[in-house]
Length: 451
Image (cartoon, rainbow, N blue to C red; front, top):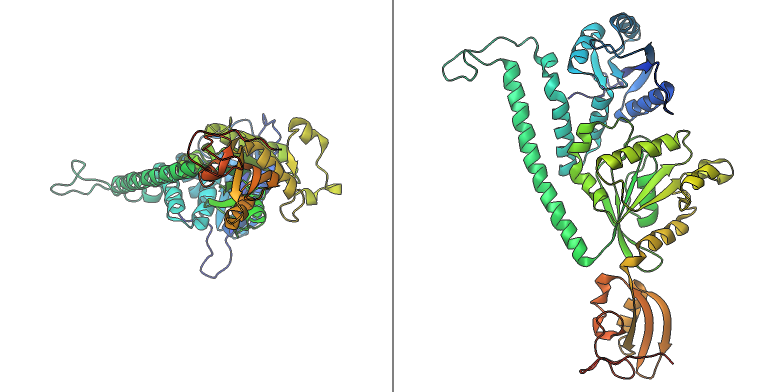
C-alpha cells in the first residue's frame, strides 16, 4: 500500500484533509479536534497539510461519503493547490474509495490507511512488520477492485481455474489471501514464543507492569526516565511502535519488568487491534497497568476514555491500574486540576521530562506489587560478605542485628530470591533447620526470637 512518501522531486506530499461533521455529533471530540489530530498523523507520516474541508451532513453518503457535489468542489480546490493525496478522517468503504478517487483524480486515503502507513514506516522487528503487513492486506483485500478494475477480462487456457478463465482481479485476491494465511501462521509461531517467554518469566516470578495510554502521552519518555532504556521518544504520534521491556528496580529492592506498548488512538482500526494481539498480550498478561495520560492536553479526559475503550476490546479493562498524569511541567503552576484526582484519587502526577514525581511513582508501583514479596528472617555468617552485600542489593531490609558469628536481617524478598537465600532463612516460608544463632543445621526447625 502506498503511503505518504516523498515524491520524485524530494518534496513532502501535499495533503488535503476532509472531514464530515454529523449534525447529531455530541461527544467531547469536535470536528476541529479530530482534524488537528489527523494533521498530526499526516506530519508523522511525512506529509504536509496544505488545505482542509468540512462538510456538515445529516448522515454519511453511501457513494461519496460527503455527497458528490461537495466532493467535486473539494476536488477543484485540490487541483488548484496541486494536492498529491486526499485524506478522509473516517474509514471509507471500498465503493466510496473507488468513487472518490475518480472524482479527485489523485490518491485517496482514509484514517485507517494513514495509520497503517505510519505503522509500516515505524515497524522495526520481524513481529511488528508481520503485524503491520497483515493489517494492510486485510484493509486492501476488499479494495482490490479499484486497483485492478481495468483487468477484468477472463484468461482462458487448459487447466486454468475459473472455468473459461480467471480474471487478474481474482488472481490477485487469491495471492493476497494466501499471503494473509502465511502471515497468520508466522504470527501464531510468534505467539507461541511469547507464551514460552511468559512461562520463563513466571518461573522467575518477575512481576510485569505495562505502560498503556494515548499515543504521544509520553510512555517512551517515561520508560527511558525510569529504566534508561534509550527508546526513541519524539513529540509526534506513534513515534515508537515495537514493544520494549526493561528490568526496573523499585525502592523496595524488588525487581519488576516494565513494558512499553504501542500507543492507542481514537478510531483505532479494528484490524490493527486484531493484528497486534500478539503484542497486546503483554497488556493482558500484566500484573499492573500504568495508564499514562498527557494531562496538558485539552482533551485528556476524552483520550483516557479512548484508551479504556481499547482496553475493554482486548479484555484488559479489569486489570489493576495506576493512573499516571504526565507532562505536569506544561500546566500552570504545575498542578493537576482537582477534578482529575476526584475521579482517580490514587493517581500520581509526574513529568517524565524533568523527573518530577518519579520517586512517588516508584513508591506507588512498589505498593501495588508488594504482595509478591515475603517477609523473612535470615542469618548469614560474617565470612559471607558477598551474600550480605547481595541481600542489601535485592532485598528491602527492615531490621538488622549482628552476633559473634552471624549477621541477622529481617528482610522483604521477592519469590525469585527466596531460593537463593533459602539455606540462611531462619524464620519465614519453608523455614529450614537452624541453630541458636541462626546458622543452618540438620534436625528439626528451631523458632528463633530476637532479643
